[in-house]
Length: 458
Image 1: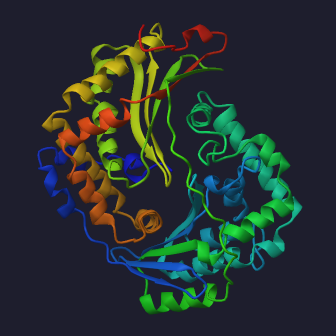
Image 2: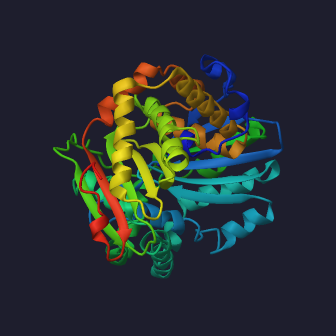
Image 3: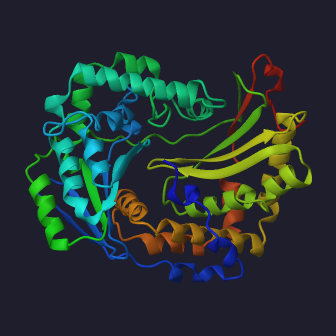
C-alpha cells in the first residue's frame, strides 16, 4: 500500500506555512468525532458525521490482500476487486455502476498486499442505495458466480497486467525488486496483480473458496462519513448487513521470519526504454512503526521537492538527472525505502549511484538542518489537511487507522508522530536503514546490459 501521506497531493497551504513552527502541526489537525460498533456477525461499523456539504461516502475494507494468497495461487485478491462489480443475487451484471451513477455517485476499488477496499461518494439521499448494493455483494455474490464471469474478469486483469506491468516502460521494476528482497514464501515477494500463470490456473472452486474465506462480515469494516442521519443510517446498516452470516475462522497469518541481507544485490533488467533508470531499495519498517514517520521525513529531505538534496543537486545544479524520487513504502508486515533516479542522456546509472550514495552518507554522517526538518514537517501537515478536506478521503483514512492501529480515532496521533521527529531522529534512521545492504536494480535499454550498476562508483 502506498501510504496516504506520501501520495496525497501537495497543496498551496504548504507554501504558506513554511515559516510556521512545526510543533503546531498536531494542533491544526482537527479531531474526527467517530462512533464505532460491531454487529453480531462481526462487521465493524464506523460513523463520522460531516455536514459541511450534502455528500456522504462509504468505504468498505476487506482485510485481505495479496499477502493472504499462496505461492502458485497469486492474484486472487485483485481479481476479486474486479469480480465484486459483476453483479450479485439481486443486482444484475452492470447494474451496480448504472444504479450508482444514476444517483450521482462515483465508486471505485483498490487492492494492496494487505487489504482490499471499495468506496462510493454520493449525494446524501443515495446512501441507502449504496449500503444495499455493498451488502448484496458481500452476502449474495456466490450464487451468481460462474465460469463466464471468472473468465471475463480474468482476461480483464491479464490485460491490466499487460498495460500496467509487462508492456509499460519500467513496469516490472517493483515486481523484480520485491522478488529479490524477500524469500519466495514471503507474502510480499509476489506482485499484487499476480502472475499470468497463476491467473490462468485459477479454477472456479479456487476463487469461490477464496471468497468464502475472506469476504465475510467478520473480516470487514465499513466507514460512513459525511452528511447522514445517525439513527436512519444505523437502521439501514442493520437491515442490509445484519442477516449476512459470519464466515469461517480465518486462516492464521504466520509472522514472516526476520530478513537479513549479507551484501548488496545488483540486478539488471533489459526493457524497451530510451533511458536507463536506477532503483535503490532498502528494507525498512512496517506501517505506523515508531520509525515510519521519520523515514517519511527523510524521504522528503532527500527528494521531496525541488529544493530537496538529491533533486536540487542532480536535476538543477549538476543537470545530470531527468528526475529523482524517494519514498518510504510501508505495509502491515514490513516496509521498503526507495530512491529512484533517471539519468539524462549521456549520463550513466553508475554515476547516479555514486551521487545517491554520497548524499545518503552525508545525512548519515552530518544529519539534516533545522530548516530542512521544518519544511518537511510543514509539508506533511499540509498534506494531512488536504486529505481531510473531503468525505471520501476521510472514510478511507478512518478505515485505514481502524485496520492498522486498531482504532479509527487516530488522526491527531498520526499527525503528532511527525511533529515529534527531530533532526537527530532523521540521522539515526538514515544510519539504521540506509546504512545497511540494499537491492540495486538498473533497468537498461534492450541490448545494453553493460549499463548495469555493479557497485557504487562510476
